[in-house]
Image (cartoon, rainbow, N blue to C red; front, side):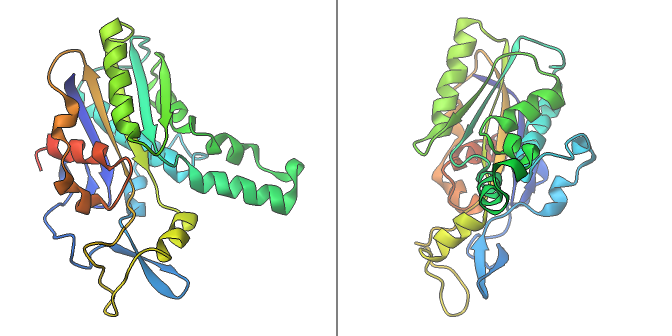
Length: 254
């Protein structure tokens, strides 16, 4: 596939302006207070998601804003108009989906019962919510699909995008992946991550990360996954959709 545009949102910043100059072993990761101890995680800074372009997503959750911003950047980077087109598709891959919102929805059911749960929280908790926000924000009218799973979801999304283009179903596909950290993930990782007395983490530690990457692709070009390599993993933390971010970082010339 030919990559016409690339968008990236991660802990180091956004797009080509993201700062990858610091070594990952330095304690430059964001520390989230959790159970009286710092919790290492590669998180997206809150200021990144305050872009005016997201002003129409007041009711959206953080996960949808994160992914929509990366998708919008990919289209902007391409210089191609996709508005009102039914020849542009969207394929999004995720391992955990909007799990923060999903657990919030479940907690509210326990606390308030079925009748007291917010319908907005419910609508944001489904895995396809992010794609819905993206299609609305960019006015894309083509087919949409969300690939969810723990076994190479981005690679599966790439194969599906290639099939859509080869079949002539779309002229372009907005292809991406993303995941976010949350309190449940934090709890699980505090049980698994070896943290030294000085607060530094070992090379073998599983340090969670979050972010989103999108590509506007069309037929032709080379294998998108050739851009992915393990060298970028420490930059973003350990993510099941990290290969998408690694591709984006490579394409952006870092």
